[in-house]
Length: 528
Image (cartoon, rainbow, N blue to C red; front, side):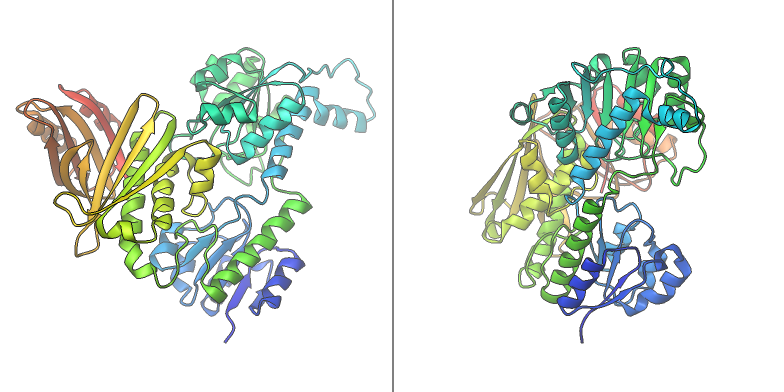
């Protein structure tokens, strides 16, 4: 029987025909995604679900999807898909991360031009029968400084277009290497320098815990008077209340926004301001981009349903059916080791070395390396997946090395991951035991054994009497329950490491108290 795919949002007829031509039974109901009850009733009958942004694939939808094998998102963002719930049910979630980059970059440039010359207001005035030539005094882009926050696929295209307009382009991106910056013709700078030097600031970074509110009141205060802000990336990157105050005061000359914290944004105090250009999340809204992502998602879903091939999956590496059982526990281990190192690294990453020892070194390590890189990059870049991670690393000039060797030490097989960043190297090693669960066995050369938990606290400290008791008492007095407590040290009185598995997330105020303990060198919460 042919696999069945439901298309619950608008996709081009050409894309729908691809399913048919490949032998997939496709049901095109483009308005179904707007009706969550109708989608819930229909989903048990399908092997695949093709969506855009209107369909909300909630845990309730996933629980009802008894046959569903793959969800394909025509576009980049998957905010409307519950990936953990999908993963728990064994449903592959795919997106099309490269199909609308040019369109989104062009929209950012268009918004910048509209803002610089006050085109929307001038257009409305002229349509109203006025001729207010002296009212709309603009600024040139020529020789102005464009600050790009996030210089990946879309950001690098915006930078290129800015250079074509003879602007001076500076960029902040923790994953942008000096060599890559030279290659694309930008000056790599720190974030504060973006604020201090830029005439225009454009954002092209995903929304993560690290990037949320990256432009807040403190950041705006550092900006030069008359700066203009463009956000065509994600709502939440700019603190909207702080932006409103800065626009009202005149410190920020204008803002061009395609995305908002809450969408649809049918009313907003920013809309009251003449120096705000707003569009309804149109970054990917061109015929070419819509066609590209639709065709890509149809091909990818057909490949998976008919042959098992995986492309651009956010929750699964590219592996064959024969390899899957052996690789599965090591894929989980590699990703968690990468995430461990990535969450602890705040400076730009220059290189990653992954050492495979023993049995794991004889496997197909390509998927393992992709999983490790995905873990390293996700804390900063959000939606990087196991398939796209190697491409993203290459774009940012991150050197990736694999080392395979025979069994060494006490463990039959292990993976060691080393991140090389500016001024530091950080290594962590792990293995899997007979239960298949990944475990940490070494950190920074210190032998160690600990499970990965959902909420963890990583602490480095000097090995001094009473420290463990102080830490445990602080957490207990703060109402934080400890699930497990593991520690190791280089030598008596030397550097020590504690990993504390917690039953709940660590509040910020408690974290600050931990950092204030005597002998603490670093304290950081981790999530897995």
